[in-house]
Amino acid sequence: MPKTKFHFLLLFFFILFLGGGCRKAAPALDYSAVKTFTADSAAVVSPHPLATRVGVEVLKKGGNAVDAAVAVQFALAVVYPRAGNIGGGGFMVIRTAEGAVAALDYREKAPLGAHRDMYLDSLGNVIEGLSTMGHLAAGIPGTVAGLFEAHRKYGRIQDMKELIQPAIELAEKGFRLSSAEAERLNRFQEAFRKYNEEPNPFIKDSFRMGSLMVQEKLASTLKQIRDRGRAGFYEGPVAEAIVEEVQSGNGLITLEGLRSYEAKWREPVIGEYGNYRIISMPPSSSGGIALVQMLKMVEPYPLHEYGFHSTRAVHLMVEAERRAYADRAAHLGDSDFYDVPRDSLLSDAYLRARMGSFDAAQATASDSILAGNFNLLKESYETTHTSVVDASGNAVSVTTTLNSNYGCKVWVDGAGFFLNNEMDDFSAKPGVPNQFGLLGAEANAIQPGKRMLSSMTPTIVEKDGALFMVLGAPGGSTIITAVFQVFVNVAEFGMSLEEAVNAGRFHHQWLPNAILIEDNAFPDSTKQALEAMGHSFNIVGRMAVIKAIQRLPGGRLQGVGDPRNPDDDAGGY
Ligand code: GLY
Image (tube, rainbow, N blue to C red; front, side):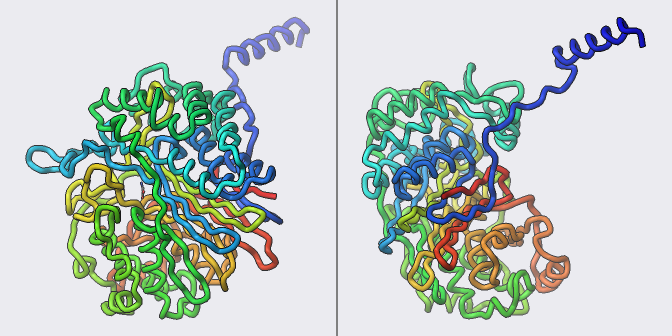
């Protein structure tokens, strides 16, 4: 080839490259997710590597597990906007190295102007979408109050500012989007444009892995919180921005509702299972009660002999799940407003009687337990969980959420964060399911200032009196059954924590009367045998996403993130 022609060709390809004719390489991420990490002293498992990194740094500089959990939550509000939050709420279960236990409820509350029929039309029918999308779907956020309260009572690092600063830097300097976050941001553009004004950092023609996400307004809000404590969120300019935003869309959150919000310490749910002790979350979450109910219902049966995913094991566990979720629908709600029969629901005699109708050869009809009729799950299960164990042996299990991906899709324009759509977790009308297909009744009816019933199940397990496991998950109604199955996989089926988390899962929530299973969760032979017993199946892509830590013999800690979320990350030292 003549030299001039060769140079011309080079020039042509160079121009093509500059003009975007060649696909530009995505900027490299300065993080990557580690699914299993074995630590000598302390471990953190969170849904995002940058948040895990923040938690590990806090632990290394002398913070305890509560300090680390608090710093991780603030970091997740920046780097995991689909569920990490300051506009939502959550639950924290704590076990100190000395064995003292505590449970903190910082679930959102219904606004003071809320009322039981607020999502019904003049004919008394539920108005589709009103409790899930837009300003009226938001409850009063609890996260900031909860994190300050947890730190006040248990924190070791004196100055809370040190725990918020890493989040401020991530918001101000920006961070590179993971592929999973970019995909979700693209998926929800239409809703973001419907409910929000531009400019807005979350509205763009296309997000890609590696896109830099800078959140200036969120950084300013976090500085208000850093400098003024919880008043930096619940009073002053941030509170005013929330109210202005919410009221622009006929939402109900007021300054008074924000100012009066308080997180609340609760007595954890405790249940014995053989030589294990389960410590979990009481109402306003259903998680702890339902988990312990399921475990107590299967305890009398030799699950380990039946074998993992054997027909007998799955049938037994499904029947326990069915009965626990039927109780959930009828009896559980915010115990500040409804007299939850907690002791009865957890009593050995009641649970034995509950399994009186169990037939080892036949599925129980759900409507022979309680009646109901409705559609299938509609939304993905976006919540987020973090497990932490520090070098002294203190453990924290914390689950927090906006409910759906990016909550109600409303971004507080004056303060830079998404609001939850947690009002959908109330029972808008008896017999009408929420987005997870869950039913509720009087116990979970809407009242001003009441907390909506949750399925979040932050849990800590002791074995022979010592710390054994910390676990929890996002996953809507499937959280409780995932925590149940991961624990049983380890305790009964002898799996390592990694095997237990990775194993396929199934879920029964009483209604709809079908077993949800992840694709290929178990062999066709098991499925066919269960169908012959009267069970039916619905296949879903994935269910709850566990983040867990197990204390290994000898004292090392194994942290495991779930492959179901590519960003789940385990770290430690
Ligand atoms: N928003 C899901 C739950 O709390 O269960």
